[in-house]
Length: 134
Length: 131
Length: 247
Image (cartoon, rainbow over all chains, first blue to last red; front, side, top):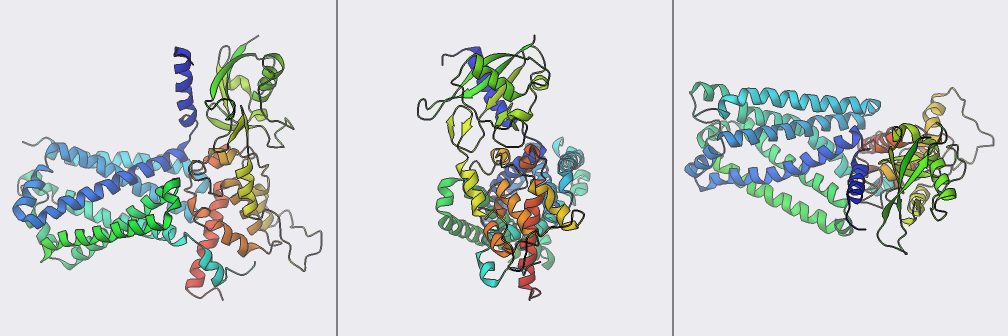
């Protein structure tokens, strides 16, 4: 099929077809996977950073001082958001496994999202001095 | 109501333990990760902001914290549980992907090796603060 | 008369490996016109080669399941007007996902029914039972089971399940729902056998409570609740056997 705006719009439609109809339960699961995989990646980085302690206290401190610069504090906030969402949605899934609130799954998803945003916001507020120092 | 599963049938209940332990480890991690993040990032925040302390995390600070038995326990169980939970989660995802599912036993063994290896490496790193 | 644009995903694996979209301008003859009516209109007036399945046209048979604007639905039970949103509106129709396409909107539901067969979908009566054995309509047991027996095996849940796609070995929502209806039925004596079948790596534990099946079910069956019910039964049995309470 030759290129035209019509084919382009149909391809866009194809993408839309896969994701537009999905609902909160799908987003909850997708975000759980996304944050889960991201956190596994972070875990290995985290262990690698801590293992610099084997090279001596000075090496550890040099690395850690860099990792506490404002840029990394901002990244830490993303980390906190990922951990919070994964934990909160984990509780949501545990409730379903116990047979609780299965009918209220959408509401619970939005509560997870709201709490993630609010608590990350509070953590961000208290981290402001670290982001804007020096 | 008919009888519960017989022991023979119980054996065939494949995939129960990974599923169940994922939930148990996840539940415990909520508390362990909560304490971990609070202690490393927020409990010393006031001191850093007021200038009593230069950084949140430095070798000496971690060393002092790990001088307490409770934190040794928390950090090692955190390392083990988070590795189990994370790699079990990866296994879950990989099992839905044909090529990995066809070699499920090998993949599971590989993930166990990776997990145990990483635990040993992580424990060795942590011991730098303790010994 | 309002005309809407109906995009249909077409093609068959043998003739043309690449599926393509074809657009048809369809007049909305009546407010109550369904997606199925539009497909029939196209077949009769524009292109007799357009392939789709249908039988009862009143949402009983579960034959005309397709994906409409990204959402699984029965073509006969989905009204065209509100979807298109008036003159010139677009409605996209695709075959069900996770099933091999035979031609255009016709899919091969073989895998879907294979999984259903795996859970032994018919009731196994105990030796002492004389027909007819009826569960009282207001008994708790009957009320638990009833919604789960409404299934018309249309396959919409299987198409909507994000796990059934990558893992074709996953039993899928409909089979698990059927197993729950039978496991919860005191007249059935194959409970343990069935629990054993569903409590497998590619059964219960593959369900991640994504709720897409429940969202698309044309009969409003709380499918996720059924799957969670099965999980709880297996967990309880398992824990009982560990603590030796089950003897």
